[in-house]
Image 1 (tube, rainbow, N blue to C red):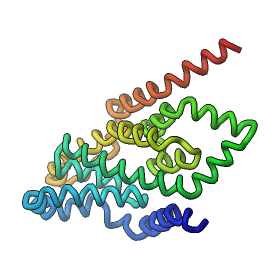
Image 2: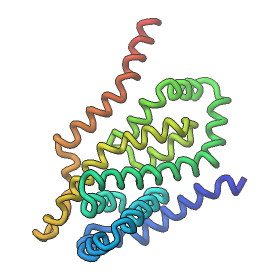
Image 3: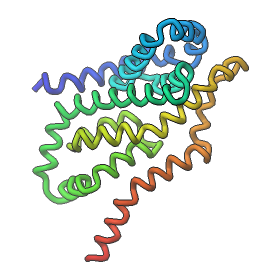
Image 4: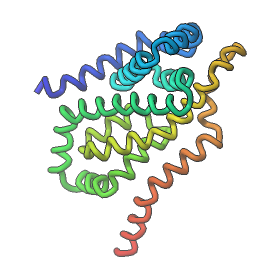
Length: 233
């Protein structure tokens, strides 16, 4: 029993320790201080830098460490919009898969079994989720208010299919990854002016609007089926 729960317990432990020990180190100030060294190393060892970046992003996400936004911006700063987005999506997706599988192997298996055996409201919730699994998973990725850790953990705890989780994760984080990477592309000029990346841009209408539009599109099948179900009653 302990072995099954160990991966998720380790992730939670690292997340708590990392919150208190790393939040002052993985920052935009750190990126600014070391940007020349990072660029020089990238130019001399591109493949190593790319692998190290993806691995670092994976660790940050897999253990829910602080600094995911900084990592995403760094991807744009080091590799440009197109390649940086690809590396950001790969690192974040692999980290999300790790959390999902760790939770599914332990606590998720137990909770999913209880949901399957449940009656009443819980049974209806599970059936509704199964019918709209893809749409719900896309919503978790596209609604900005949902924390990334929660979008990785909750699906595992209610027994969604891993293949659906993987597909919606990779596709669902692309819009946000593009935004963060785009900020990173221009971060060098921001540093030259003595400023810091303005993450409030994420809530500007031209940014949040399309994201909410995609979220509404993901929710559309649920709305249509609900309306049709009421008409059939």
